[in-house]
Image (tube, rainbow, N blue to C red; front, side):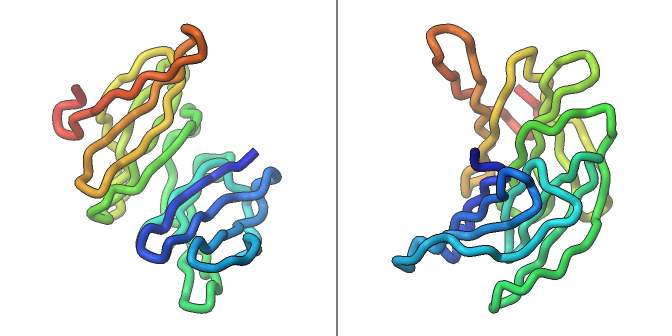
Length: 168
C-alpha cells in the first residue's frame, strides 16, 4: 500500500510514505531510476501532501508536521500544529495558494467532513459536511476542490466539486 502520496508538480516528483509510516520516499519522474529514501519520519505519518519544497503530514495524534526539504533533499522537521483528536484523518491536499491544507476527516459521529487548516493563524475551519461515506480529496491548480466519494454501488466512485466559500 502507498500511504501519504503527494505530487510535486514543480519538480515532477512523487512522494510517498512506507507502509510502516516511518520513511519518506521519492520517485523522480525525470530520472530513469528507482525511488529512493529521503529520510525517516518520527513520529509515523498517516497522511501527507507536498507544497513548496515541504512535505506536510499528520501523525496518529493528529499533530501536523512540516518536513522542509533543501536542494539536496535534506529534511528539517518542524511541529507546526494540531487538529482535534476526536477526528480521524482520511486525506489531505494543499491549497495552491500555499495558505493551508484541505483535510477530509471523519468526526466522532461517523460523518465525513471537509475542513481547512490555515497556516497563518493555525485555525481550523469547517468547509462542508460530506455525509457518511469515505472520501478522498484533490485540489487543482486553480484552487478548485474535488472530493471523490467511495460508494458501495458496483464499486463505483463519484466525484463532487466543492465550493470552498459556501461548502456546496
